[in-house]
Structures are given as structure tokens and as C-alpha cells.
Length: 413
Image 1: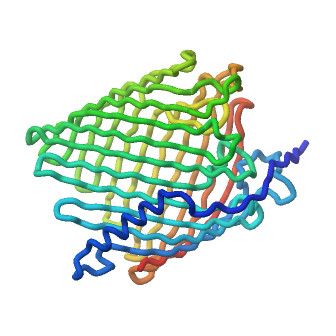
Image 2 (image 1 turned 120 degrees about the vertical axis):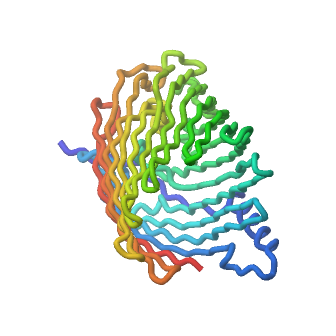
Image 3 (image 1 turned 90 degrees about the horizontal axis):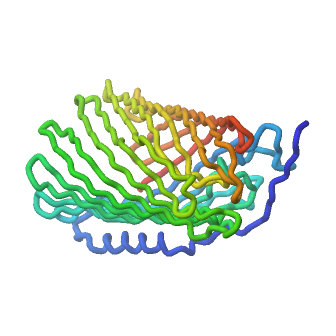
């Protein structure tokens, strides 16, 4: 029997550009622009751009086939308008890169989801002498949270703040010491999703051997601490954790046309209040790039790693996945892109509140095909098709299938 489950809907006003993240980044861009010598042209450093895109999705909320969100139906069409500025400015041996993008997204039927997107990032690449170099920077992003694991017609904005700093010291001609620290903060707008708010702090140290050919091999130790400040006592358990990783890191430049990157080793994850959810084992990611022609590139990847889960039954999943991407430019101004990916997520200790559930897993398959055309040197247009399916092996998840399409037009000054 076909279900007609209506999702909770609430009309809301679009968010204003009220956060300080994009304002700070914009001020940084203006400051760098004012510091340019009079002889520097605007196009050498600052690159404003405009864009508009239209997209459609036949299963916006990623619902099963027998569930309907209501009389508005399962599909919707979205329009996105954006404006931004890119900065790339060398300052002696240093270089600063920054981007600011503001967007307005409108949904044709589910207009309570309308929102204002904000993205800003800045990175300083610094160097002291020939032995010491690194980067420092940050990023701010406000966007609509995906519906893949949370199926609601209420608007749920996700704000992500990131800060990082790293340094590399070449102590000998063929040996390098590395250290890095970064922090990611996630905050959700919808009150029912506040338990997903989290902060992840990461520290890493390692040593690399640098071969004469440009390939590298090294080892690293990494610690990640995760904090969930909005856990609801008595229902959602404390998901705070510490994750330690000891890995080998390899960059192999096989030839001019191909390269292989690998990072893998042992990872252990320990939870503060729930030791039965602790996990450990091999984690790793392998990526291979092959360009048999200047106009043709393939990138394949495979991974097995712990990942955050933004659903309601667990804070993380063990992911096993593989992907293949291809890019082909038969003409100077034309490029075709294609990608396929398969992902299996395992949940060994899911919980509904304090009730333990049997382990389960889900399988996702995604595919996309796109074409891009560049008019002159500053106008680009394109179109793409996408498909996304998921199946589950138990009832503790959501199976769905969706198809989408989009077109866009970008103008860079």
C-alpha cells in the first residue's frame, strides 16, 4: 500500500548575509587590492565573477518510492544566482589566495527552503629561506544541509568554519619534517538537528624522504578530537571521541603521465562515555591519476576509512568506496566530465537513544555526466546529468533513487 507521509513544512524567510565570515574575507580582499602598486592591473590580481544555474531533481528529499512528501510532489526546480571575487596575489616569495562567493537559491515549489549561501576562504603560502615553508588560512561556508540522511522539508542550514596552519622544514636535502594543525566546526540551524553540532580538532606530525625524481615516502601520526556540545542527555549518548592514526604516506610519480598517492595505516577510535562503540583497524586511501593524452585524464580512487555520519543512529560509519573520474577535452573550448562512485557504509553499533540496534549497512551508487563550453576566455556554460541510488540491508535506513539535471552560465571579469 502506497504511503502518503507528509513531511513537516514551515515557511521561513531566507537568511540574510549576516555572518561575519564573508565580511572579514571581503575586507581582506579589499586590503590586498589597496596594497597593489599603481602599475598592477585589476585583472592581474582580482577576478570578479557572476553566475546563474538552474537544476531539477525528481526526488529532492531522497525518499523511498512508497513515500510522498505531500501534494507538491517529490520533485522541484532550483535557481541559484551568485556573485564572487577571486584573489591571487604574490608578495615577494609569499602568495595569498582568497575567494568570496555570495549566492541566492530559490526553490520553485518548496520555497521555505530558500536560502542565502555564503562562502569565503583565504590561504597564505609563506616561505622563509629555502628550508622552511608552510600555509595558514581559513574557510567559512553556509549552505543547505543535504537530504541524504535527514529527510525533512524544513530548512536546515549548515555552517562550517575551518582554520589550519602547517609547516615543513627540510632539515637535510632529502629529508623533511612536517607538522599541521586544523580545526573544523559544524553548526546546524534546525533545532531538531542541534545534536549534530560538532567540533573536530586535528594535530599531525610526520617525516618524509624526498627522492630526486620528486616522489616522496613518509610516516605520520595524527590525533583527532571530536566534541558534540549539543547532545541531549538521556536520549542521545555523549559522542565525544578521540581518534589516533599512524600511517604511511606515499607520492609516486610513475611518469609524466601518471602518479599514485597512498595514505594508509592503523586507526583507533575511542569514545568518552561508550566504550562499546570504540573501533579500530586499517584505514587508507589510494588515488591514481593517468593522463595518456594532454586532453584526456582519468582519476581512480579507493578508500576504507571512518567518516562522520549526519543521521540519527550513529556518529560515524566505516566507509568502503571506490570512484572513477574522467575528463576529455576534444577541442580547446569543450570539456566532457564523467564520474561514477560506489560507497558502502557500515554501522556496527547503531543506537536509537540508549537502545542498541543490530549492525546494518547501506550501499550508494552515484553517476554524473557533464559538458562545459568556454566562450572567448571569460564566459563558460555547461550542463550535467546525475543519478543517485541507495539500498539498505535492514529497516534502519532509507532506500531511494533520484535523477537530476542542471545548466549553468558563468561570467568572469
